Length: 144
Image 1 (cartoon, rainbow, N blue to C red):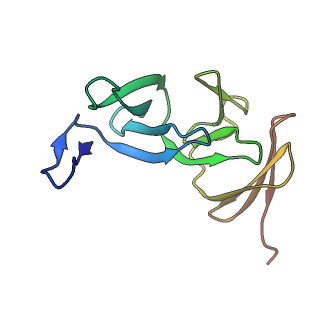
Image 2 (image 1 turned 180 degrees about the horizontal axis):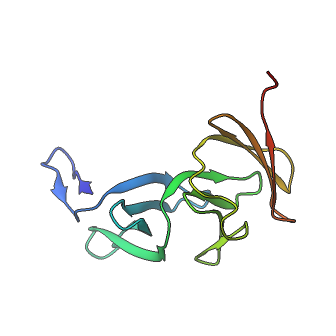
């Protein structure tokens, strides 16, 4: 992660494998530092120190999964699609939506919100409907 001040030379802040850098609805800058070797990551926030004007990185949480996609729904809730599960970010925690082993190595390609309770996830080979309330999955594939 580098910081470029003015026209100066980039300054290394910290060695990280940055993934899914984004700005939240309330203006916070979040990103994942992923470790593909152990299959874990951390969710971090970048902010500027008001006294020194330096950029600082604050670890928000450890995450026992690798994020493959992020998504904000219509009301601003933050979702993370990982290798092991789908998670909702609530109160500085990533809460799993599905039961264990319901979402394993599914590779999402796109995501939209169908209704307040359903996410539609495009995957290789079809479309998944994820009902957030009852934790169910429906697979739709093209008929041959």
